[in-house]
Each structure stands twice: as structure tokens, then as C-alpha cells.
Amino acid sequence: MIYSASDDAETYSVVDEVARRALSTGARVLGARREELPDRAPLTAILRYDFGPVES
Image (cartoon, rainbow, N blue to C red; front, side):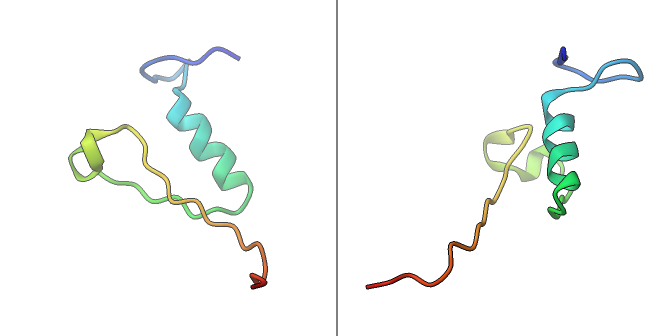
């Protein structure tokens, strides 16, 4: 698979692939303007996983 820095009708970017994989697992994907993301990053993620109860 070859990724492109920009996307068009024939290629897609790494950000597109991340969104595709997230959606295929049932994740919630939200769109935002680049100006709204930290350091104008092309992608920001909040990752959560329930590891179950924490034992002390």
C-alpha cells in the first residue's frame, strides 16, 4: 500500500487510512478544522481502552 501526502480520487493519505481503520472497529470519528487541532496537526486522537477494574 502506498500513501500520499495529499489525497485525491486515486490516492489517499495516512489520515484517511487511520480514519478507515478506526471506523471499521466501531470507533467514533469526528471531523475538525486544522486550526482547531493542537499545533495545527493533521490528526489528533483520544485513545481509550477499558482494562477492567484496577486492583490496589
